[in-house]
Structure formats: structure tokens, C-alpha cells
Image (cartoon, rainbow, N blue to C red; front, side):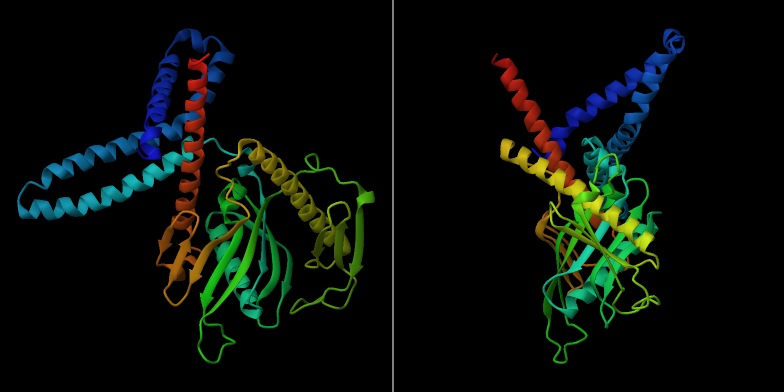
Length: 372
């Protein structure tokens, strides 16, 4: 039985609860009680998208049954039915993925703005060039989704690559959108620096960190070492003219943050402190996750810090996500920011794993309860 088939019972239960809430809204006593009305409306709004999507899914199933009946008709009808069936099968798959995401408990951090950090790994200049290419692809995708992208720090190379680039992506559900991109990304292509035309393999690392509020991470000024220096690197009109660049070292953890994108020390320091706060927040989260992992001996659905999560093969126009076994032959489109299909597949897969873990936990709790 697939994880989606296991989830059907939960979906039926949510739909029944939705219908009951709609019935409550027709009762005069509910309207006479503002608190009760507020509660019903809130619960209804919370599950409305799930129910609407589930009902669209059931309608697609009904249409698929009609198509199967038409496949027994004459040749012309069979041709139309086969075409319609293929379209409906695609809709069915997409709706199943969306439903798995919708009924999986969401992370409250998903709504936050997020820092996206990309660093060149193995591969020298070619890794730096791909870091720049991947960054541009993410920026295009973020802008398509209506997010605002603010450059925080960049260390460019002479050929137009990035040794490191950090951006703050602002918008509703920014972290939830990008959180599964953290890890090692491998690229296979012929570098512009390669005269013989040989394919090289390089890597970049991506970190995705939710922005932390000051109340969430309190930083002791005595724990900081702050250095000011002249900005350096390719481009930038203020490079090597003023001591505007800032390097902040958090002494207890050894975390170092550098920012030189702004002209003023004050602005660079403020940006660097935001990045430091996000890294400290993420460090605390990772330690908590590790403790929980040690306790449970298993954890599903973080999607972060994975080794070699994805390969980008340019000669074959192929992208392979190794975590979920997905291969798409549309690398050219993905590098232009058309990442919806890729992101949706990853989200659905991790939601399915989280849901499976939840269902297994519910079954275990039921078993324990029945034995006591």
C-alpha cells in the first residue's frame, strides 16, 4: 500500500469534519456565540484548501473511470479517451503530491524570510562559475514567485563566478519554499577554461537558513570580535577605497561572517549580524534535531545538510535529485529559474516521508494503548 493510500482515511476524516463545520455554521446558536463562531470559521479556513483539493482529486478519479469506459468504444473515441486519460493521470499525480504536502504538519518556520548561502566547493574556478549560475537560477525562481531578493554578501572571481554569495529572500513562505535545497550540488559540464573539451565534475554547497528575530537569538556583544577592513574582489565601485567591510567572529562557536556589499560600516555590520543570528539559530536547531534523532534513532523530512543531493549534467540536459530518485531532462529550463516541477516533487516526497512517520507513530500509539 502506498503512503497516499494510507493517507486516504485521514483525508476522508478531514472532509467529514469540514462538512460538520459547515453544518455548524447553519445553527443559530453558533451565530449567537461570537467565540464559537470564530472558532468554527478558523477551523473551516484551516482545512478548506485540503478539502477543495481532495474533492478535485475525487472528480479526476471519476473522470478517469469515464475514460476507461470510452476505451471500449470505436477507434475515434478511443483516441480521444487515450489523450484525455494521459492528461487526467498527470492531474491525479500532481493532486496526490499536493495533498501529501497539505496534510503534513507544517513547520512554523516555513513562513519566515530565509538566507540562501552558496559556496564554491571542489573544482576551483568552474565551481565558482556554477555557484554564480545556480544563484542566478534561484534568484529568477524567487522573483517569479513574488519574493524580494536582497544581496547580503558576495565574493566574486575575475571570471564572473562566486567563491561565496549570500542573499536574503523575503516573502511569505520563503523558507518553506527553499528549505530542501540545502546540501551539496554537483555539476558535470565542460568548463569555459577547458581547451580540450573534457567534462569536469565540480561541487557547490548550499545552506538555507530561516531568518531569526532578535528575541529568538540573543547575542552577547562580549562574545564578538568585530574587524573592519577594505572591501576586495572583482567589481564594486567602493572596493579598496574605504574600510567599509565588516568581519564578525562569534568566539564561542567560531562562526565567522563577512559582509562588504554596502558602502557603510553600519549597514554591513547590520547585515552581518542578521546572518550571524540566522546561523546561530540554525546551529541550535540542528543540535536539537540531533538530540531528537539520537533519542528516536530516526528522523524524517529535514532535507538539510545532505551530501550530494543533486547532480546537474549539462551534456545530457539532465537534473537528478538523489534523495528522491527523480530525473528531469530539462536542465536548460531549470537554470532559467523554471523550478516548480523540481521543487514540487521534492516537497511531495519529503511530505510523504514525514506523513509515513506520523502514521507509523499513530499506529504505534494505538497499539500501545490497546495493550494497556
